[in-house]
Length: 401
Image 1 (tube, rainbow, N blue to C red):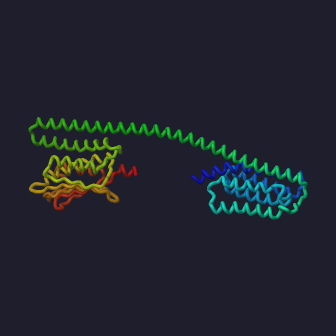
Image 2 (image 1 turned 135 degrees about the horizontal axis):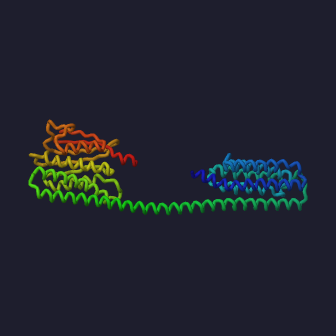
Image 3 (image 1 turned 90 degrees about the vertical axis):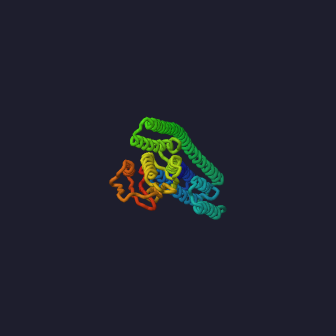
């Protein structure tokens, strides 16, 4: 992309240079006709034709600006040598050689070796022509006055060509730069508006999650109030379990509105808060969290939060009968291909008839259903206590990546 921009810029220098090359050859033809140097007319005629062909090909993008310059430079070098041979050094045709480094250096992409080689060859050619023709006789003999006028016209012509090329190049580039600045300004204004809209949306989304969390807490409080009016222990147990599940979901929404990364949950801090709340309720159980820094989408975080809540609740209810130093550990690691959740206790272990495919409790049924919802797989085993391992992927995060 950058090389293309440089080519386009150099093209804007070569177009007027080639046009001026055609006009200069027309001027040289008139000079040669004036001094009756008819044998030399082939040079500007052929040179003007070459310049015209290069202009057309460059205009329709059949050749690039660098190639057109090299062809034009070779043509100028040959023409200057021929015209100096026919009319002599003092006719000043060597002035046109000074144009070549000027136009050459308008392109900043030349290699160092190319800069040295090209400019060195121009200096060498000028030196050779000076050595051969400075005091030598020309093919045509013209008066000193005519020779002086031709030299003056050639010098003015060189200056005019430099002025025209630089003026055209500068104006064209300035117009493009101005258009680029205007486009950049518009883009910056649009980005500012989009950023403001995005910020407003983030605030609205945070407010939504805040209200959802508050509503869930209201529901949880209503369940607590309802449980106080009921004497049936089974109903109270159901209400408390439902309350715990609602609080697990509410914690996810709390994480969402307190986090700048809208729509994603820092699951490590979520697990820590979940375990801290369990630790506060069950002070005799040592609760530990070992997790990588993992960020999950809302679609994965909510069911995963419920799964972990159910596993923790089940362990506290059933695992630690007769255990002196109960411990509960939740581990979440990000492996190469999957996320791995492990919930382990040092309790009495799973009963022999425990079967995930045939759940005997609502909590186990919820765990299996939610694991399937996040496209995960679950296995359980006895390893100095019960151990549940869930492998899953966060599909929403994978799509973002």
